[in-house]
Image (cartoon, rainbow, N blue to C red; front, top):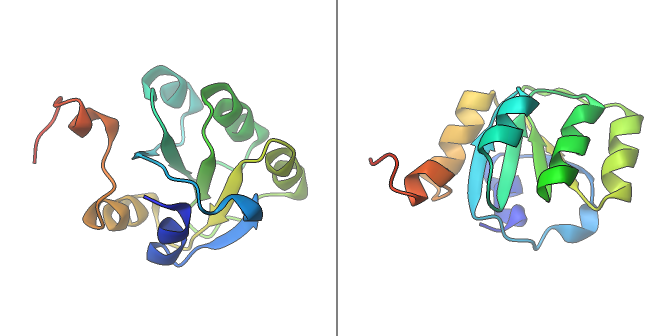
Amino acid sequence: MLLTQIKEILDAQVIAGKGDMNQVVDFGYGCDLMSDVLAYVQNNIVLLTGLVHPQVIRTAEMLDIKAIVIVRGKEPGSDLIEMANRRDIVIMTTKHSLFTASGLLFKNGLIGEEIAHNELTF
């Protein structure tokens, strides 16, 4: 799914990495625990989280995550935005909860890695 599509589906605002919106992500992952992201993410994802801490950017950089959606209307500080811009990571914000944002993306065709690997079926 294109990042431009994610922006539209979630009625999101792009606040960092604005020039990279034609990137494609294959999967979605929603989590506030960066240790879980490090343990379970393996492929090209968009990360949905309510965490607005520099650790989110560090985690994204380690896993080559190109896009983060901050949920629940949270606004990251300028330090987080600067870190993302320096690393070419797109950050969007949405007023939707993590549950609703994930559901909207799933409804529109973005799946989780576990479904692609036949660990779960629907």
